[in-house]
Length: 290
Image (cartoon, rainbow, N blue to C red; front, side):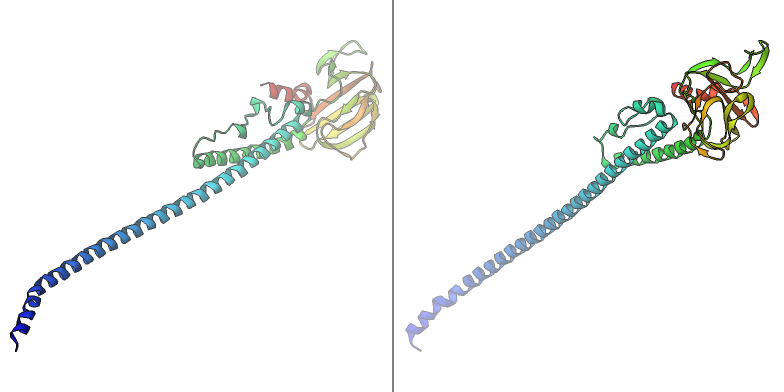
C-alpha cells in the first residue's frame, strides 16, 4: 500500500463520532418537535371538539328558547281568546253592561289577570310556567262561568219590561178596587201603553191568552222549579208550547182584565208558591255592585 493513500483515509475515520452525534441530536430534535406538534394537534383537536360541543349546546338552547317562545305566544293568544269568552259570557248575563266590558276594560270584580300585564324580563321557563298556570285557571273559570250562565239563563232574573217604574210591590197592600187589605202576589211596573214586555228566563210558554182578572196573560215554565206570569197585556206575541229565550220580546203592556191603568203585573212562582220577584229582578245589579 502506498504511504499517501494511507494518510488520506485517516481524517475521515476521525470525523465519524461527530457525524453520528450530529445525526443523533438531529433525530432527537425532530422527535421532540414531532412530539410537541402531535401534542399541539391533539390539543387543537380537543379544543375544536369542545367548540363544536358548545356550539351544539348553544344551538340546542336556541331551539329550546324558540320553542318556549312559540309556546308562550300560543298560550298568550289562548289567554286572550279565553278573556274574550269570559267577557262574552258576562255580557250575556247582562247585555246592558256590554258597552263597559272590553279587553281593555274588565271590571276588577271579575278577577281577570290581563295577559298584557305579564312581565317578560324573566327566564322563559318561569314565564312559560306562569302562563300555563293562567291558561289552566282561565279554562276552569270559563267552564264555571258557562255552567253559571246556563243556570242563570233559565232563572227569571231579566227585568221583565222596558220600564223601571214600580207602581206596586209584592206583599200585603190596600186593594185599589175594594180599599181593603189584600195580598199582592207579584210586582207591578207602570208605563205607556204598548211598552215592551220581555221574558225573564229561558223556558216554554205554558199559557198565552186571555185569563179572567189577569186579562191577556202569559205563563212561562222555566223548567227549574220557576214559573213566571206576565198579565194585563195589550198584546201577546207568543203561543202556547213555544220555546223562549231570556230577554225575548213576548208582549206589550196594557190594561186588560182587572186593572186600574196601564201596567204589567209580574209574578214569580217557585215550587208552586208565589215569591217576591224583586230580588231576582235586581240580582245582576246587586251581584255586580258587591
